[in-house]
Structures are given as C-alpha cells and as structure tokens.
Image (cartoon, rainbow, N blue to C red; front, side, top):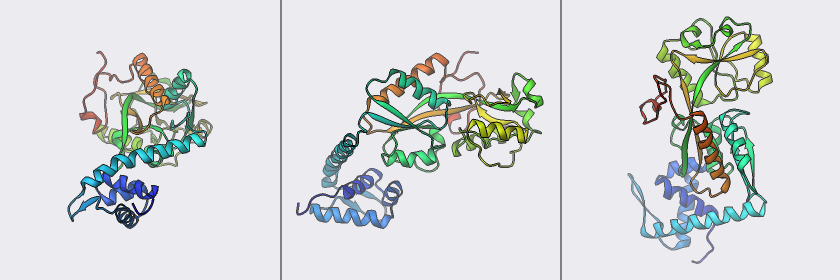
Length: 323
C-alpha cells in the first residue's frame, strides 16, 4: 500500500461492513453519513481496491472487503487493548448499574466478592438510551436494562442475557391509606394519581412498561412529574406529594415510606445484562456467574402464574414458577 492505514478509516469501514448500510453506520459512530462515505472512499484509494459493491438498494462487501474486515477487527481490538493496558485500565471493568442497590448493583456486589486481581467501577447513566452509545463507543463495558424496550435498532455487536423478572411494586407514604395494606391492587391506584416517573430505576424503557400496564388495566395515566433521583430527594418529594410511586422490589428503603407489591395483576420488569461481543475480560464471567447464582437462589427468572409482562416480552418463550 502506498500509505499507512488510518485507524479512523478502519473503524468507519468496520461499522459499514457490519451494518451494510451507510446511514446506520454513521448513526452508530455519531458522525455524518458524508464523513463515513468519504472515509470509505479514502480507504479504498489507499488499499488500491474496491471494498464495497454499492447500488441504490444494497451495500455488500467485495472479496477484498471480506478479507480486510477480518484483519481490521484484529487491528482495532489489539489497538484498543494496548491503550487500556498503557492507561492502567487493563484489569478494570466499567459497569453501568443504573442506581444504587437496585438489581444491577446487587449483581455487581456479588461479582466483586468473587473478583480476583481486577476491579469494577460503577457508573449511573439511568437507562439504555444513555448507556448504549457509550457501550458501542468502548466508553463502557457492561450495562443493564430492558433489552426489548430499546428505541430503534440497537448498536451492532452486542450480547444480552436475561437475568431477572423483577416484581413491580408501589412506594407509599407511611401516612397514606394504602400503607396499611400488605399488597396493592393496580385498580386501587385509579383515584390516587400514582406517579411512575420518579426513582433511580426510571428510564424510557421503564416508562414504556408503565404505559402498557396502565392502559391494559384501564387505569388513567398520572400527569408527568420531574424525575426525582436519590433516596433523600425521593423521601422529601414523596412526603410533599403524598401519593404512591411505582417502583421495583429492589427499591432501597426510603424514610417515611413503605414498599408494597403490586397485584391484580402481578406485574414484572425484565432486566437484562448487556455487553459487547468483543469484550474479553474475566470480570464479565464474574458478572454473569453472579447474576446466575442470584437468580437461582431467588428464582429471578421464574414467573408467578398469571404474571403480566409487557409486549414484546409477553410473547417470548419463558419459564414460570409453580402454582
């Protein structure tokens, strides 16, 4: 070749080769489509060969493009691994756990207990819309959320693993009449102006689930409120508003409030662990093993009889617990 290969050109080439679509590749890379097209042409000029067959209907790799894709992935993987080692990041793993003491944080704590010679760093991005671009851009290693609630096409090259069907619950002020109940039927929220917008677990995927649940039950949706995060802020506002807040069973204790399971229906929120296919780190195995062990001990992936799931999860194969 007349010139050295530029790593940026290789990254743009790999994105197009994996997406087989210039617009999707540009969206994945967070750059303009014109920049991706320009860089692919520049790489073809340097390589002295055509890498893609392009028509108005399709993009396909040429034989030379298929050969380069194998090498380009190897080059980029080695480059990124070398940089992480030079920066002292080779033994660390960045994990988005959504919020403190929620299900993903429980998995991380269990993984740390079995970790040996490497460390985890927790991040709190609050939903897949924020964390998936970071994951695809190698700025994050593992995240958690509702995989089937992702808006649009997920970035290429990700793996996901269902870890829990978590019971949806209600956070109720201690002085509220519903606090005296051991369980809260969804219909009991009809006149209470219940909120689903507050808590560290709230994301676009969570709000999709709440909208489906309330619509299926014929319960009117509450007016939107600002998303309040953190136990202290939640404790303050739940007393100010004096209304129930939809949450999940791993909700940390909130002073002045109690958590009650939602029934009629028993509704669940599906959690998945998500990571890049090219991630080769012992911490990933520790996280997966921790999730599986917690799931086995707590029946995380079993569903109570008649449990409510959102679409499309309601139509997917799953396991159920006993009667």
